[in-house]
Amino acid sequence: MKAVIFDLDGVICFTDKYHYIAWKKLADKEGIYFDETINNRLRGVSRMDSLDIILEKATKKYSQAEKEDMAAEKNATYVELLKEMSPSDLSDEVRGTLNELRNRGYKLAIGSSSKNTKMILGQLGLGDFFDAISDGTNITKSKPDPEVFLKAAEFIGESPANCLVVEDAKAGIQAAYAGGFESAGLGEATEHPNVTYKLKSFKDLLEVCK
Ligand code: BG6
Ligand code: MG
Figure 1: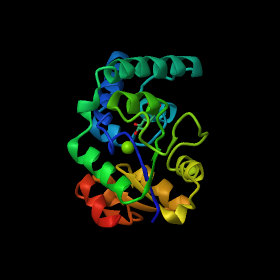
Figure 2: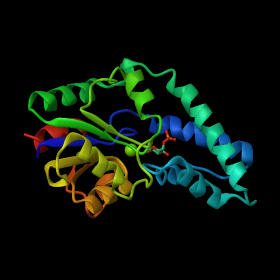
Figure 3: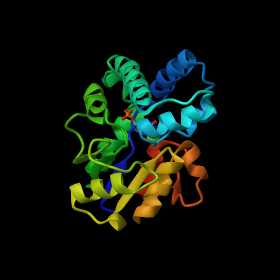
């Protein structure tokens, strides 16, 4: 293993809770049932595909233009929450593990479906940290398609066989597997049948990447 490709939301930082708050606000306004279980299905899934999952519980049909307005409204709420983030939102465990992996010589990249990736990394003080960033702005298909990770591997000049993907989403483990990557899962991603390593905590990566 020569490189590690990290998902962002739910792995490097806990923006997953802000996604939930922003979608919940929109769903409540529209009178659509939404809960944490549905929210878990949105992990790793693009903004528009996430909206389609939420609208499975809607009683009316929405036009494409209405859907685009709703996605923009959710993103505006989300971005307001992101503005409150700072380097103190990066845990000591994540910071320490990233630094140790760098010291051990691994190339480090991001593979996230989010179009807000660069803003989030900037808020966390990680704007210049990673060797490459592959995110929602350079892909056409979101996880479980492997495109975001294949692009990350290409950006750092490594083959998938030399890269470990770190994910909290089942869709992300599926994407890694489809792309020929080994994966390390956190949280519910450990339940995916194709996950290579099950992590209890982020720092367990130091046992996998010696
Ligand atoms: C992923 C999140 O990282 O990014 C998903 O896990 C989210 O929940 C997706 O829908 C897209 O994010 P954004 O910031 O482009 O709306
Ligand atoms: Mg995630």
